[in-house]
Image 1 (cartoon, rainbow, N blue to C red):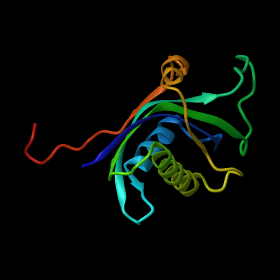
Image 2 (cartoon, rainbow, N blue to C red):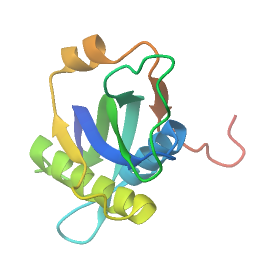
Image 3 (tube, rainbow, N blue to C red):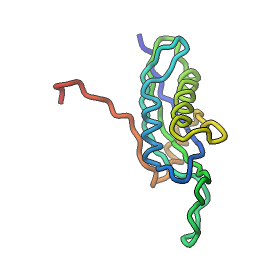
Length: 147
């Protein structure tokens, strides 16, 4: 029997100025599709949430960030994961942290610190996700010939 978890999640990290939120969201979705387990196998993950920039609002006449500066990005959402019996929420979060850190480092290089990947309250996801957050969702692939 599979063990299923739905984990409210906050992911925050610095990104290069030229990074795009859509790319960041796609990177996170891809990173959690196959979560690593300690025995070297993987278990499936599904992400549903929103990505957005964190930071102080800049006045309209403010100059754009200088090249090489970092911007703070975040995701608030829900990570669903299914695995073998004995899978715990802490193991799901640890696997997500490992997968996301590897993906961010591979895409953007060493940014000085790894992404923060932490579980939060479900109400915080619903209440604190900005209205202008870009939606991210793991799409499941349909079997061939199935509509």
